[in-house]
Image 1 (cartoon, rainbow, N blue to C red):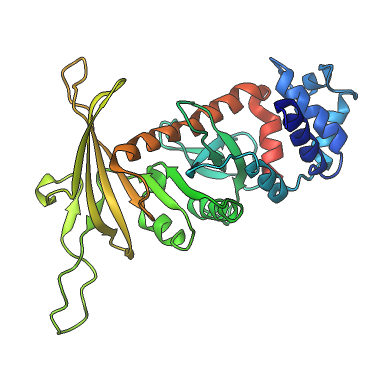
Image 2: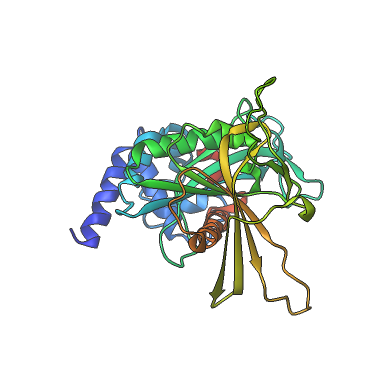
Length: 336
């Protein structure tokens, strides 16, 4: 099958899964992808690819009910046969401070805000990160986090649904919002390996001592405080890599650790250090990661796979820059 035929088939399959008003919705999708600038939703009706009048842009959004599960399965079909599939999950907030009647509006965490929160809606996105040095991502699901969900529970559900349709090994990379016992416990039964960044003020625990025969067996061993080097013990593995862009990298690993409230879920702690100092002479802050699940990657490759997580951030920037003034279309479709 040629690339053109594959592309045509993908469009035809997508069209069939859009539900009601699929003709107007499909025209609107083409209009969005080919319009350089649009300052309101009605501007999209001026595209030569939108063969209807301006009010059909609103009616298409109101009537369309795309089949999300079937669309996700269709997207997954485009993932080639790989040694493993690299996914990323991220949570972002859309500020809606003036939309007082907006459904599920509430306080959302936002690193860009001065006080760390904004008034609006939260969204969770799970994407596939293609192989190679590519700073892009292909979304599989992008959904609003309702008032009875949390970012972690929503991400867990999204990962579970995607993993049902993927036959290869799965590795999902996540930011420090998910580097905690709640995420590790909730995703324990999902057949996927997880690589998360962890905050430097976290405390982990080693394996407990052998049972002495009296009382309840201990669940925890020695404390491993990431910000207190005096609590560390010798590493289980250490490698040094000469990266052409970042210089000399040292990767250290401690195995068989766990969170206090997730003692049954074993993890590996990984420290990534850039040994070459900054131009100012200061040392780079180390990156702390945890790996949970089947360890099918060598230590030399783990840190570089986490670096690919930033593809999801680039996708967010693309979505923000591409879709209309105040992103009305994007917010409306994702809130359905």
